[in-house]
Image 1 (spheres, helix red, strand yellow):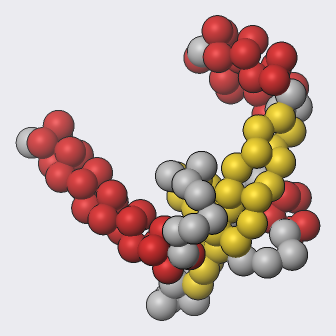
Image 2: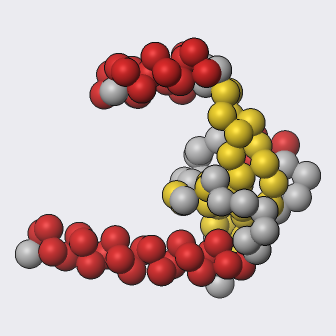
Length: 102
């Protein structure tokens, strides 16, 4: 599970009919450029694959900003639970950051 920035997959997010659904991400050459430079073997795999189906879940933060998560977790996990899992993971990431920097 990762959090999407406001610029990630804008077109796909606009086409969503609901706040939580499966979306097909097409592997266009423009999208694959960064991967091509850093991970050539992964680039070839994704280029052959052509597309990936993921689940995008959107919710609103208390600040009013949108929280958009992309995951491969099943639909049986509620949107609220996904947000809770993300925040639990974020706390772990902050601890790793502290250990690495200090």
